[in-house]
Amino acid sequence: RSHLVGLEAREMANCLVLVQSPSSFFFPFVLLSAALVSYQVSMVATAQNALPAQARVGVILDLTTPVGRRRRTGIQMAVEDYYAAHPSSATRVALHFRDSAGDALRAASAAVDLIKDAQAQAIIGPPTSAEAEFVARIGDHARVPVISYSATSPTLTPVQTPFFVRTAANDSFQTAPVAAVLGAFSWRAAVVVYEDTPYGTGILPALSDALQGVGTKIMDRTAVPSDADDARLDAVLYHFMAMPTRVFVVHMLYPLAARLFRRAKKAGMMSQEYVWVATDGVGSFMDRLSPEDVDAMQGVVSLQPYVQLTDAAKNFSARLMARSRRENPADGGVADSTLMRLWSYDTAWAIAAAVETARVPSPAFQTPGGTTALTDLDRLGVSATGTALLKAVLATTFEGIAGKFKMVDGQLQLPAYEVVNIIGRGARTVGFWTPEFGITQDLNPNSAKALRQILWPGEPWSAPKGWTVSPNGRMLLVAVPAKNGFKQFVDVSQNSTTGEEKITGYCIDVFDEVMKNLPYPVSYRYVPQNVSLDSYDKLVDLVRDQVSTITTILSVRTFPF
Image (cartoon, rainbow, N blue to C red; front, side):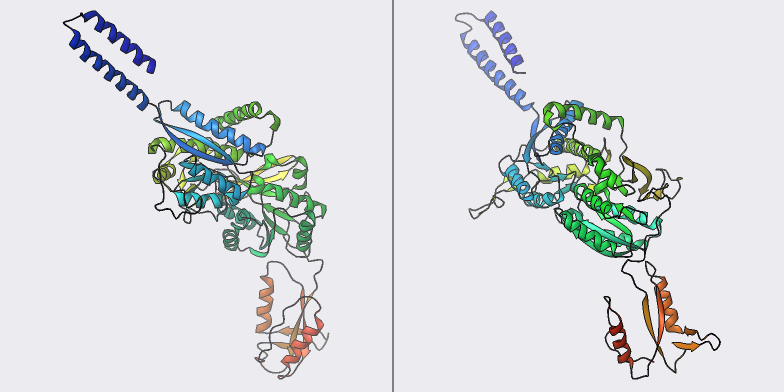
């Protein structure tokens, strides 16, 4: 536009020359010249004011990995696509990338640098829940919105960190479909094995409640460090083998989960009678599993948030692959999570839309008063635009390439989940779960309320019973005092013909009913013991002396009858 200003000025000067005379028009000429200068200044100022206002957005990624570099390209493409679709926007997002190298402390340092030096008004990322916990607190301190498309741990909540926004599914959402899968087969006991990270531990309270809601009891919870070696994994698996429960719920990110399943296959635990249900830490990352990993997971049932692959999503994926090969040819055709790829794109688009809606001014941070600030965190100041931008992000709604983008309570609305069965070289869909209809074979209200046939570990089509007699299991011997009096409670009698003992009474009925309601069957038999009213202590001592396995001995009590 500046070249137009110069052209208009030259045309006015030519007109002035035509009316100019050496003497009589000298004074008017001076006035007109002054007017010309004023006009030029005004036009230049107008041209400068017409430039879009710039909003600075930081992005924290693990740029040491091919996936991180691909995320960078995808986020850049999302911003470019937004302004191509909205060319008259009054604002422009300027992206500032930082590398966390997958380290939580480096992610926190990157956040401080973005806010303090780059004056970032919002931050996208970082990729993991452990990193996001640090960055979210820094963003909350400086009132800078932190928007994550991949930090799914329920420990990160907008209640504790109001400036944290999750443009992904909260992990606690999937506890209901996990419980629904177990409930569909009436498995009443399960073992939970999880990654010992914020990602792994955050789901446990919600998972416990969900399983309890369908009548499934958690018999054991085992945490596994993300860097556990094979010996540690083997120890965990051998511990499981000694238990009667054969239903296992795995909540781990795919690198650790893949190693666990490889060791489980070697230990013979990917065979008949075993049930493995994995959360979306496996199901959402099928594209990133090697053929060896998939082979070790045959028969596993897993979940993934349901995303319909529209033409727009397919087009973006193709463009992203082509551009990534040009920008980072050394990365090759790295496997990537389709879901995270689409969520990251929609997140960047949403921020560009929110910046336009809020019309945030140039970065402005209110620095803390005084000179007592001793750390970078103390010296960050508070963003003057953060609150308005946060409100705009939370109110942004559009049809994204990953589906409808709509925030509910600071996070992406509850999605439908797809239930998949890992078979052959990949996974096939065996059903869906929605909050409205629960488990269904298809995504419509009239669909059958059950899963399609599943091929379980060891390749049986019939569902395993979920329990077995432990290799270390022994019959439970139940001592029964044979005595006179109060026979309505316990009565030991003998058939005069066969000599077989018959044990009846209210206490026997209660004990039998309790044993029937255990999550798995236990073999037991009653052993009458001749005792007198004052020898209950001897009966307890007898039980303690005879039992060689681990047991719990009740404290000595007053003999009740």
